[in-house]
Image 1 (tube, rainbow over the protein chains, first blue to last red):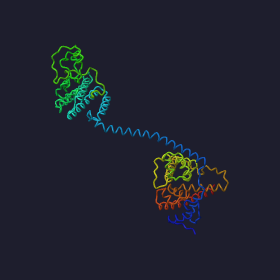
Image 2 (cartoon, rainbow over the protein chains, first blue to last red):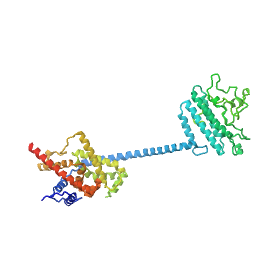
Image 3 (cartoon, chains in turn purple, green):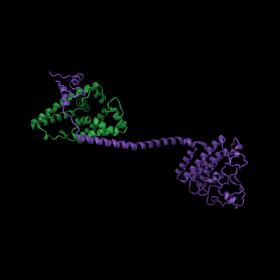
Image 4 (tube, chains in turn purple, green):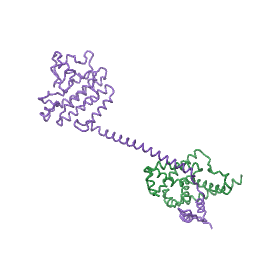
Length: 315
Length: 188
């Protein structure tokens, strides 16, 4: 009598008896389901021909070689990408700290690199002028920071003036900047100058120490070895940044407005003063009053068309 | 012979011989599985090659879990076969039911056996993917219910239930095949 188990567990038991796992044994059973399983188990199975087996094996190993080669190439690229990403992240993360650093700090050299990049990115004269202003602002901030610490700020103050002079040099070239840009440059220049003036008025904690340095300090403290410098820039914002009218050309070395009785400090741009006054070809003293603080005469800017190179304005 | 885990580890570390060893260990059973589930020898060989190419590509990321290594290969094979059937369906290709066997050269008895085997395989291919896999693993590869459960990531009772339903359907499908053959013979 044929019995058909309707319970999967019963069928499983009968199948285990008729067709034990991991064995070729096959015991006939009258159950049609077990018989069907026996039919499947005992039927000739497809086999891989030796040729096909060898062909597929070779293909597999070729694929393995290719995959390994591809990984060899990808691993260095992957590492390079990872390192580049980390470096970029670190640099981006450090940028704010670098920009806030002072000259005696570890990140300060990075600040110089960033500013060189900024200057290189400034293509138009207007952008370059504003980049100089930005750098002047940073130098002024550094001077403030150094002054607060009681350290000499004269180097960075001089760099601030250099940057202001460079901005002015661009501004003085006719048609380079729009009226609005000129106005903004003037305002910024005055603001930076005010900051630098404020530092100049701040008494240094140790005047005798500053007096012995070869570089003038950013103070009005009289020094026996160096002339007392002024942080007041030679040109005023208005006179320096506004494009000169046709009837009033930018002063040159031949200009009679150069006052040989009022030498610029060592750290300030001479703007032709030394060439004219120290070579014995001094013009007649026109009696013009020197700006307060003893800076170079008003209206004297950087040489025409000779802006400082990228990165100028750095201490 | 080194244990399978050792061979797998060496293959992952770039040992070409270990990859060859893995192929030698599993190529026949993967081919059988694929051949039962496809219509002709050429396609079965191509699909087997695809499975092993996928194996070498995936070896670096292969991580040993509770399932045996061959479970991973069967899964790759099942996916390749499913993809093959999707492609075939799109192409509406007529199944080359007799494979590459030249029936004209076979003796009558052998020819009859060959036809019976082909009828069985054709009936098997009418079942669902999972039922086919259960029957192939259980009765072609002679794996235990527990092994099949591990390979399919199912419970043993689910495998037993699936086996039961698969055999019932296969009996029905073979019967239908036989009736159809009888009808075609009678009318030809």
